[in-house]
Image (tube, rainbow, N blue to C red):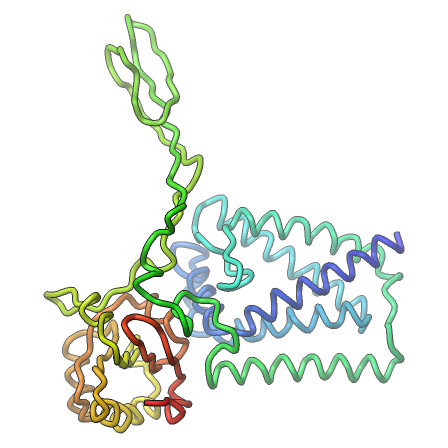
Length: 364
């Protein structure tokens, strides 16, 4: 039991730190995933949606801290109880999402390692077993340092996690795992890989032949002879691979200008997914930035989901010399974790990306 606890302690501790750090690197992204879980189609806890970011920060900081606590042996009973309660909740959540097909990606490892709910549920079951080992063998979890040193390391772990969360919120994720990271080409990421897998779907045909009911399973051809087709059901055996980027577009209400703008060699894309909820201090900075970019020969466009009246109101209020175009809200939130944020592209390749707090650092 002592050795089982030791192995479980290392595995669970490291996994919680890695999982927590990946989400801590992008707390806004995790908050968007929580909003999806809180939505009416999943848990129907819509009253929690406005607090998603705060909940996200608390959860991921606690996740990292628990991993640190477990590895150094700080307050073992508190740590193991917390781990057990947390994993029971997440095991229920991933099972619910998977069984009822509510959420396509669980968000456990953010964009670094996308997992389906069933994959995540399996991972949580394994973790649950290991945490139960820790729960029943908690007496074998001993501090690896003295009492004072263990307390100091635990406190430093908490402060470091909180500080890192604050830093990435005020700037951008330290590590960008998304398909719009610096160096990525949007056009290339909109294409399927040459070796992409195609969907494999079984068709279950129920039909009659000579007055007798029969069943046939094939890949879509159907029975060669039949009197009547009674029913057809499909079952996906293998999902098709999808491009890294699927819904990116730059549109007016009448026209799709995506490829036109992505061919520009000096394009400044100002992303404000919602003009009404954007940071006013950040929006004020956009006037001087856009004017400077236009002087240096850049094509400057805004990207938003806001309606035409709101776009015109903001454009007039701040004296912007550029137009806003439409794009899907989820895509805009994925491009840059800032509202507003600025992205520089050269023929579709992302060369710079900045939070509104850092737009003075853009090199034009």
